Image (cartoon, rainbow, N blue to C red; front, side):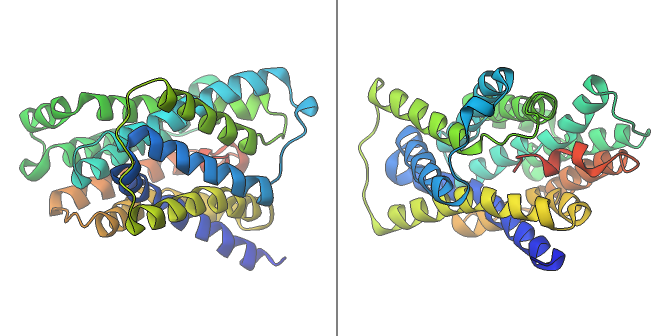
Amino acid sequence: MSQKKATLIGLIAILLWSAIVGLIKSVSEGFGPVGGAALIYTCSAVLLLFTVGFPKLRQFPPAYLILGSILFVCYELCLSLSLGFTHTGRQAIEVGMVNYLWPGMTILLAVIVNRQKTSLIIIPGMILAIAGICRVLGGDNGFSLNEMINNIMENPLSYGLAFSGAIIWAIYCVVTKIIAKGHNGITLFFILTALTLWVKYLFSPQPEFILSWHAWVSLLLAAIAMGFGYAAWNVGILHGNVTVLAAASYFIPIISAVLAAFILSSPLTLSFWQGSAMVSLGSLLCWWSTRSATPKVLPAVNESK
């Protein structure tokens, strides 16, 4: 396979992942937050079994098998439930933006834990990303502390899960690079996530499924976006231009907001777009601060999304 073709496939993965926020929220409206997430990860796991295959667990380092599984499942639970429990489409998009703090957090953690070489550009990068989230949560009032607090307190569970997920995924990206030893447990991790969600669904009160063609189509698209997204990303990072893919992945917050606004029919204000652009630019600056390092240390080329 040519490098250009592999790079294009990797870029398609970025596009697929960018649709996740809107699709998860759309599925949850028909099947409930937990039931919808369980269905998404079940279908995605099946797709991964056919595209990536099931890993040979005996070859996995025990630390990666255990710690990697825990971190991945916890992150996916935070991501899916934070979106599923939102009250409106606009709130889901905001929660998704909070989750996209993970790229900058990953770089910062890599600097602390792995002593990744970096420059002072990382400081304004992190400040800009956090300021972008504040701008998003401030609503039409811009950097309004009161508006931010009101937004968060309206649904602290979703915002809290999204922020926790960003931290967990940053830890996952850094830790697994050390303990995975080149192994990829993505199929196993998806199966474990699906099982965890089904256990929660069976042992806690859940709303009834509202079956409609829209819910089924959203479920199919969400499963494809997750399952094929990982498969396409693997092709991209193995045979494509890693530098191009790494840089492009930091624009996922903006692409995600565009697609989510379309999927959820939720118009967004100028202040939101300004905030999302700040998040992307801040994350890109954090990545640029490590430009002298080898590409494989970057979070965007891990099993990330």
